[in-house]
Amino acid sequence: MLKYFYTTGLIFLIGLFLSLLFAIFYYEWISFYRRGAKIKLVQGFVPIPSLLLGPPLILLFYKCFSWNLIYPVHMYADFYQIFFSAWVPALILIVASGLYSGLKDSLCQEFLFWRSKPFFLFSTSLGLKPSKTLRKIVLLRSLSQSWLRSLPWFFGELLVVEAVFNAPGLAYEAWSFAKVRDQVGMANSMISILIIYLICLIVFKSLNRWLGGKLSSYV
Image 1: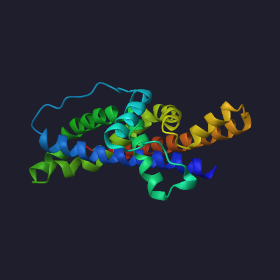
Image 2: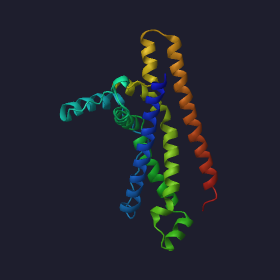
Image 3: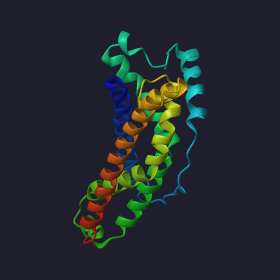
Image 4: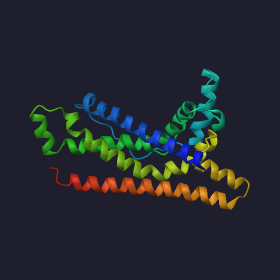
């Protein structure tokens, strides 16, 4: 059971890190290079099913680079093999859950909203960098809101991604138990996934509520 928690947790944490990395780079781009230009907003989530992303990527990497993206067997793999095998599934989950497009939309909306506030205009008149003034506000708001919206999609696509990449996570374990009609084992795996989902939901909801209270006094 421990290795299933380990795999699913690793994929989720890498997905969280990749979303943070993308948010930072995209924010710097819209704040510096598009500062005087019109920012084009993405209209809502554009989820792409992981079944359309996973198999072609596996074939492409194997044919072009001889790189096998299928998860190694834990018993015969070291930490680095398992660690690097989780990056592509995490990246696919970000795209398949709509987090990528939703984060772009949220970053643009938050940047445009806070850029028009008096405190921002005042700080820029003092010679402060616009990107530095809004970075923390925009990043925290965008990440918390985008993750909160995409969590159901993220965990919904988890089973498909773990099955395609043969990743021994909790969703893959539940599917394996279902194939042999082990209802107790399947229920335990699904309850574990549900607990992780509820914890993530509470964390992002609490973060959103806390940010809303902190930023309500900003003018």
